Image (cartoon, rainbow, N blue to C red; front, side, top):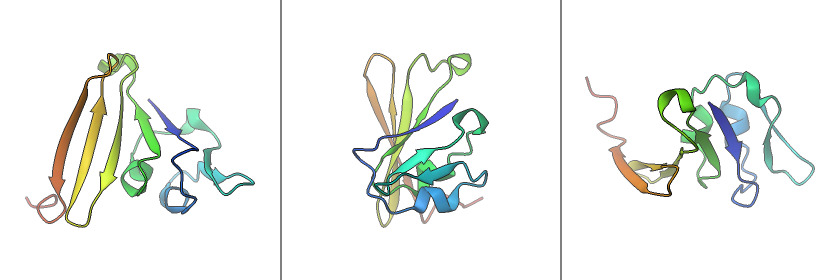
Length: 104
């Protein structure tokens, strides 16, 4: 599992850096987010959920069927969109209501 940050999409907000529980994200000289130690990332996806620009991508490992697929999020005031892109480019979208997401 691996997190990658698309520097072209990064808006330099620092939210991913501030939320990372492993302190693995830093900013470069241009203020863009970069992973310091990608191999130490345990895949909690906190940075992915926090990024308002969809710049953080979570690459799915081959051991769980990823084969080059990845996911990213899009945040809205009332819901979060999870986008899953398979290795062949097929894109799936899952919409999760922020109001209903923590109901048990």
